[in-house]
Amino acid sequence: MAGLIGTVTLNLALDVTYSVDELVVGGSHRVTDPRQRAGGKGVNVARVAATLGHQVLALGFVGGVTGELVAEELFDAGLTALLTPIRGETRRTVAIVNGVDGDATIFNEQGPSISDDEWRAFHDRMPWGRLGVLACSGSLPPGLPADAYAELAVRARHHDVLTVIDAGGEALVAAAKAGAVVRSNAAELRDALGNDISVEEGARQLVVAGATAAVITDGSRGMVAASKSGAWRALPVERVAGNPTGAGDACTAVVAAAVAESPEPDWSVVLKSAVAASAAAVLTPVAGDIDLSAYRRWQPQVAVQSL
Image (cartoon, rainbow, N blue to C red):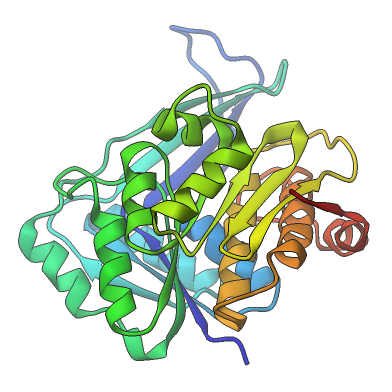
């Protein structure tokens, strides 16, 4: 039986969306259908995993009135959360959708600074005994070290909990060295390992560096996975038009669910589900949602090649 999936979002946000007939710089706008909900990549992972039928626990920091709204929305969405209080105010992101062309203009607040005491409190509250896997993703708030996710991975290993970390650059390499299952995209991979490296070779290098496995999204070329057992590429079923914002988070959710079920899953099978879930996420207007019927239709059709 699969264990509980803990999702870590260290820079939680309240995502606010305004829709306007036409966005005019310097103008006054009437907002139609204002929406707000808890956001952050880890929250998106939790939503997708829950939609796929897995038990999840959302972990992160909240502070101020905005933090209260985030906690309330998570509860209303049916997501169990264990949130560490902080003195600062939880950040907001604001998306303004232009009715003329559907394009969104997005404003991202930086987020509150996390103190050393608050970071220790987060660790002290971690329910290691309940977790099957810990999935970490999203930006880091001010005050936390660049290797914060790798630090969590090391602590998790002491409790026999595997970690899935979605990261890029130096954080990706640090996560690999900490023994995590690492998740990234081709651009972030090359930012970490060099522009000339192929996705296949980059995934293998991360495993050599210490990663339990590496799963790298590669745009229209699909997805690559590597572990000590081998390497594979999964090809997309078809080109999908829509909102790609939550596709990577859907992939992370599938990877985390697979690791929660088995510490050594069949990565060729995981890739089939990850590609299907990512494509199904593109069909939905909001990150954190997936089209379940499309996912179930596409999953058996995904072709996987050994590398």
